[in-house]
Length: 239
Image (cartoon, rainbow, N blue to C red; front, side, top):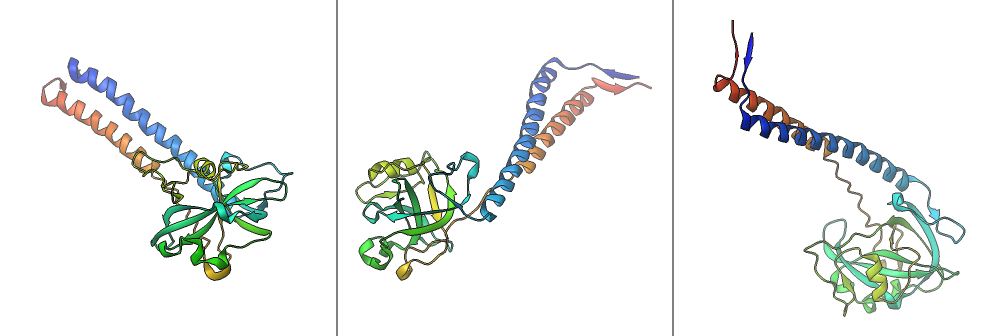
């Protein structure tokens, strides 16, 4: 016959902690399914033919991150700003973000690509300051809010440290159609700068390992609880 005399303190603590650990594991499983759906949607968005951002088409929505888009308009090179970032090789520099104005007056912010620090000044890359109507293809990117330790923007030099599209637009006195940025593709710019095609798709998905961790802790807690009672003679099998 099984003889079990639960100790009050450990039983109360386990009764509180065990549902919490199991709940966290279940939550991570739910997050896993959500993240897998997000990654699948992004993969579809990237590999579709570019969607033209014209006046008669619905504008991208929140689930359209990395949507392959195209837009025609004229760059307002006098209002370009600079996002401190690196290129695909990890070399530090700036991404040149320039307003592009369509014929019907809509404005989009375009990340035209990377320039090294010595090319930030547009006077060092005059060929790239293209005029006239241009068609840009690239990927729709929603902004990222500055973090707790993100440096403040250098407004005097129009340098930013996060993809805060709304603040960038406000600083140069433009009203974009949406608070987003179009990352230009790798089509070469005259003179070679800025260098487009800098989009990195990096969507970490660690939720399965997190789920195993929480469920594992729940199993360990249960084992410790019963091992304690066995060691104290409170759980034993009487022959």
